[in-house]
Image (tube, rainbow, N blue to C red; front, side, top):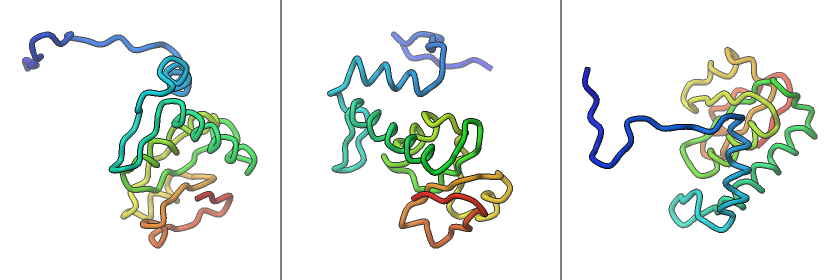
Length: 133
């Protein structure tokens, strides 16, 4: 199968080595005041995104979430999904994106915590351990 590559676009991309949280940290250092996320009127600069994600990571650690444990991300597509995603990674946990309409995914994933959103909270089946959000 032949792939279409627009003129001027490279045929492949080179990605930095290392964890995704480190990529965000580097972007926050280099581009702190540039817009990283826009969701309607809500915006986050790279610096704000990193700071918010670090706060989520700290909150998870304070609630006992350990490196390698799974944390469900039970939110609609939004800027907050991205912020929370990075926060979970920065805590050293594993992100499990969960479709808010599929309640059984939470039990199957063996999550130790869940981040949810008011618009999807009613569909949430709370895990037996720590809940966030």
